[in-house]
Length: 461
Image (tube, rainbow, N blue to C red; front, side, top):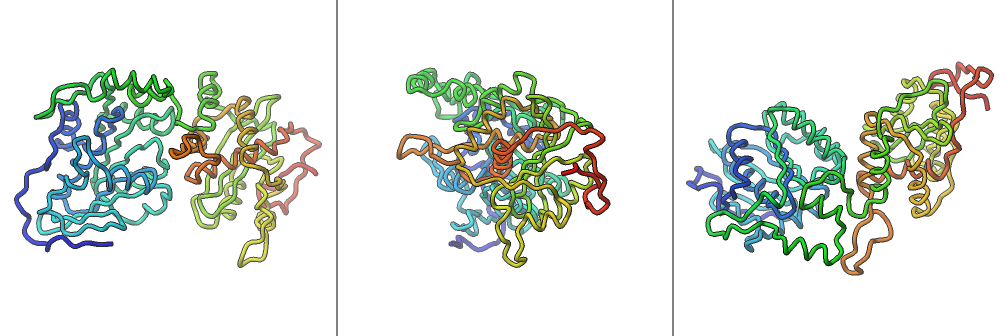
């Protein structure tokens, strides 16, 4: 529902920020942005006012430069809860920080606000989720907030970054850590780039010292003690209040296993062994939903040498090209049970379409309970060595894959939500349920088949 507020016209006289006064710990970031910094990573603890700060910075920019401004969250539900329906600690609605004199239109359905801007132009502030990152392609934002970036689909920043680079726009990343995933990678990259503003603020560095406040800590020792008394996990406390990157996402299925892998040196550079066959594990879907792990078994070890996820609409054709370009010899392709489902429009199964393109041999797995697959995946992870570069996207997904908390039942929900991490995690689960282990290549095992579309080589079967 769209609600017009006023007519466009001459830019009114307003003082910005409106109803918002930065606290002292927020001033360095505000000043850096005012002085022209285009990229800011704000790793601030829970309750430090990250989103309110970023929102008010955006409002000031909307009057200065006409254009589209995005406030992005992991999904639309969180965007609505945190900001559109959000209430600040002093009881004021987040949307009330927009001065009424500059608002032209407010759209409830799209969670957008259109305002007047400089030189007679207009600006649009829009909240959105990035669970389907492809929706970000096309528009031309000039400013973007990536709230809770470690929980977002990492493709969102990959899509938006070149747009902002081309139009001179800015990006702010306000978040608390969620383990050593793409949020940690971004922090390290920002620290190494002097053009970025980077800051970590724990509860020991933040106080309520804006005019009219009492100077007390934003999160007092009493609050923290109460959290511990009610049984909050210490990893979570260190992550949320002390900005530690060593914790894992709450409800993560594989976070602890991945942390052990990292501590044991099993997330490192893992070279491809040309004397070993490559076994592939898949999850099927349309476009960028097709996910593929490439693995080699070396004794009891599983070397996970590469992860790939589709980027186009014709995913099986794209996969066939990728497989042909890689120098691997494939022992088998483990595919999930739905590979034998008949596709509407073609009358063929995806297995049949893939085999016609030379993807073989395909071993379709039986349908199994998700919980059984997760149990198998947890066990398999203890034997895995991951290439930290070639598997970065897949590792992020495995670390994020989780179950949600049910506040009504006060327990974890039974099944994981379907989000950007699901396809990589499901592909790994396919492998955990069906892997037969690698087979060493010896001369008599190789058969040259010129009719095989993907490189002319395979095992003799």
